[in-house]
Length: 224
Ligand SMILES: Cc1cc2nc3c(=O)[nH]c(=O)nc-3n(C[C@H](O)[C@H](O)[C@H](O)COP(=O)(O)OP(=O)(O)OC[C@H]3O[C@@H](n4cnc5c(N)ncnc54)[C@H](O)[C@@H]3O)c2cc1C
Image 1 (cartoon, rainbow, N blue to C red):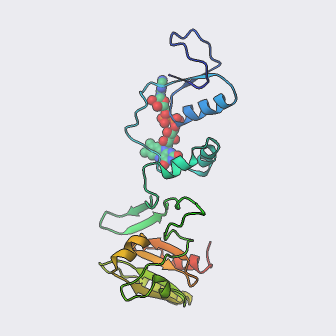
Image 2 (image 1 turned 180 degrees about the horizontal axis):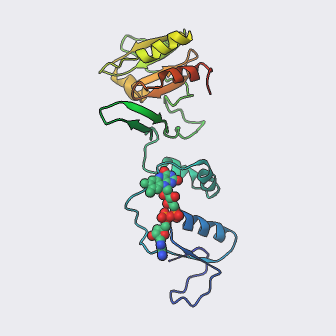
Image 3 (image 1 turned 180 degrees about the vertical axis):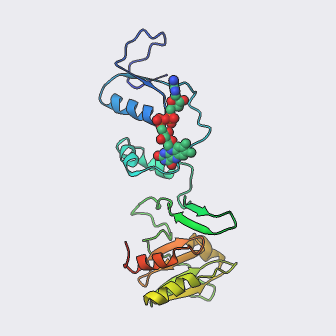
């Protein structure tokens, strides 16, 4: 049992509460916080011991985040929820594990925490693609500038022609640069990173997606 206000609950039930909340799940606890905040006594009764065997929250929607911000918990939810910040939680629908991809909902991981005094190299879309020295003495920054650049950072070799075909059809200048350099792979976080002519990351991924033409349309501003 949890008393949401400062007065101690009487286990014998002699104390009267205007509100009894059955269940200490997200709804019960949120209600208790909100009532407690407004000075309304309530008692939460929970049949379990609070142990969560099977966490179900993969994503928190906008409204949930509004509450979390108000309660001062948003950053803990975002950065301390068990997933590393560069861990995407995409949904991929496939005919079978080694079959065809039918649809994909991208649920990217949160961007790194914003700290103006701290520079964290990242390829989170929207940031400047980071500098890494290449084996031949150039910087990764030397690779960008003329048109779009799709970096393929894999020792396996990835066929990026879906991007080049889509770009050619749209009249978008796009070059593929393949690099098999461990340090670049580590800093760039993903094997595929699409960089704009101004050096900002437009998209990144683990594999060439089925909707490469849509991504090309989006990064060239022809689609929202
Ligand atoms: C597989 C799965 C994935 C999900 N993914 C997401 C997600 O990514 N994002 C999201 O926002 N939501 C997600 N949800 C939904 C989310 O988990 C629920 O909407 C949320 O848990 C509902 O909260 P609740 O407090 O109403 O109920 P519950 O979480 O079910 O909590 C009810 C609580 O009441 C207790 N209780 C029940 N009866 C009694 C009783 N008689 N006396 C005392 N205690 C009692 C139970 O022990 C439990 O602790 C997911 C759900 C599932 C099943």
